[in-house]
Amino acid sequence: MHPLAEQIHRGNKRALSRAISLLERDNPLAAQIMAQLHPHTGNGYTVGITGPPGAGKSTLIARLTQKYRGHGCSVGILAVDPSSPYSGGALLGDRIRMEGHYLDAGVFIRSMSTRGAHGGVPRMVKGVVRLLEASGKDVALVETVGVGQTELDVMGVADTVVVALVPEAGDAVQTLKAGLMEIADVFVVNKADRPGAQQMTANVRSLLSMSPTDVVWKTPVIETQAVNGVGIEELADAIEEHRNFLSESGALEERRRKRRSAELSEMLRDRLVRRIERQIARSPALQSLVDRVEGGDMEPHAAVLELLGKFAVGTDGADF
Ligand SMILES: Nc1nc2c(ncn2[C@@H]2O[C@H](COP(=O)(O)OP(=O)(O)OP(=O)(O)O)[C@@H](O)[C@H]2O)c(=O)[nH]1
Ligand SMILES: [Mg+2]
Image 1 (spheres, rainbow, N blue to C red):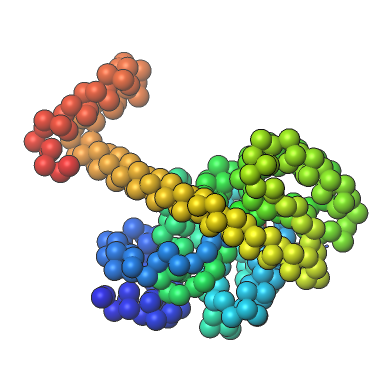
Image 2 (image 1 turned 90 degrees about the vertical axis):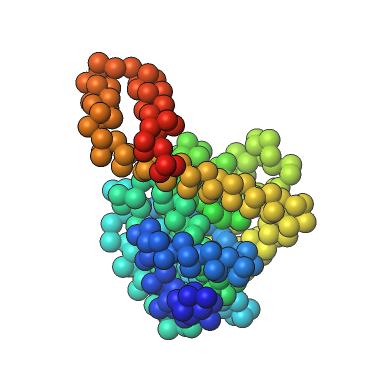
């Protein structure tokens, strides 16, 4: 085993951090390490927490972490910072709030930016979650703001998705629009110390009761006050119940299988496209095809056929 892989497996935080950076930069060493660590993955459980900016996701995560640590479980926390204008400087705040956990050897905290990373973020997050598992983390908690498609896609890594809302008017409707309703396995109405929490809970329950999948898994709606530590026990129980439901029904393996398959296609697509783009950049003839499409002189279907045809029979074909 590569020394870095060995250190990760022993739970060394610095090694884990280094490997994540390699993964982010798509360094070839990351691929080697991931392959070597593969036998040590698959034993963790991943919980995604998403919701509107400022809903209290980080505070909930800090509380859940306390709870899991109390049961002797080690925890990896991954905060995916969106490039959206909604959030700014929140990450530092997150870090300070979670400071107590920083000193704990059983907790690893890392943030990742989606800025400029486009669609590759969900794939990267999957890799990081596996690294966390390989380093012996029992639970991975992934936070992302539910504002865009990338952030929603990040939740695809989770076994259980928790959507956190706050008691504010219109929130439920916006949530529906943002596609959060469909991905939620557990709903949280946080800041239940504020007025309107019960109304919000009732609204979400009534929206859920109209969902056709509500008979298979009845999505719980839990009121919490993360700052005061209220409702955290109930939230942890709901996550546990969902986990049991998934494993007993066989849906857990099904979800994970789909996830692996999606990851593979995503990586293949990514690599192929990058390879083709590199080849185009190297060849003036291919570049002129692209220029003609951009200039509106050539129809893209025809260009794609011609480009791919060149690769299939061309001298550069060996590259594939
Ligand atoms: N009143 C009240 N405030 C809370 C509660 N939970 C969190 N907060 C406060 O809400 C603010 C945002 O909390 P965070 O945990 O940073 O929320 P977040 O969803 O992680 O925020 P972003 O990552 O910026 O989207 C902080 O000032 C918290 O102290 C709660 O139960 N009640
Ligand atoms: Mg946060």
